[in-house]
Every structure is written in C-alpha cells, then in structure tokens.
Length: 137
Image 1 (cartoon, rainbow, N blue to C red):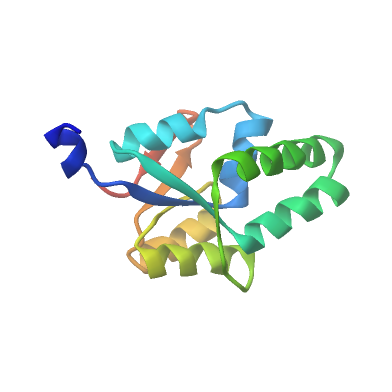
Image 2: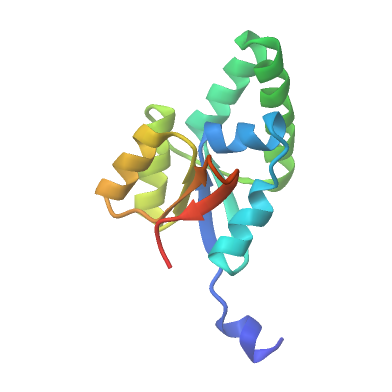
C-alpha cells in the first residue's frame, strides 16, 4: 500500500432523504460530487429513520417520489452502511454526524442551518449551479 493511501483519511458521510432523492429525481451524481468535495474515500451512511422515511415515501408518495424512493432504497441497501439511530429523520442525521464526526449531506435548508449552528461539517446543494458545495475546506 502506498504511503499516500496510508495517510488518507476515510470520511464518514451521512445522507438525508433530500440528498438521496436528488440522485433519482434529477439524476445528479451526488456520491461522485461528495467524494470530489471531501477529496478522500468515503463511507456513505444512512440513519435508520431516513430508511423508514424512504420506505413510507415509496408506498405513499406521489408517483415520481414513490419511484425515486424505491430506487434510493435499492441503492442504499447495496452501497451504504445503516446507522442505528432514533428520533426524526433530521434529528438522526444530526445525532449520527455529531456522534461519529461525520459530514452531513442535505438539500434541506432548515437542517443545514441546524448543522451549521452545531458546527457539523455539511455538504449542500447550490441550486443556482445544480452542484454540491461544502461549508468546510
């Protein structure tokens, strides 16, 4: 293993529902953009309440959201770690991010404001550019 690889930090990255749905409603390559912003390998994580929210949306959401939620669930099961957490979906993103020092990915401005107030590193959608940005270097 190269010296560069040995020194590279692997980042835990927690995704909320809004960020996950972007992959399947707008076709954005969220994971690739996150890796580029973080500039290191990542462990993508979804808290259990986010999984539950996607399950509900896949059954009860409008047709486009239901389909995107189902696709997101299939993708998560194959590619993400699931974090044990309780509370609301937003609370679980905050809790997992703080407890494990993870970066949070969201498109929810209310959640982003909460994360900033708690000094949690966050990645969010810059709507005007249709790209993700971070609140850290």
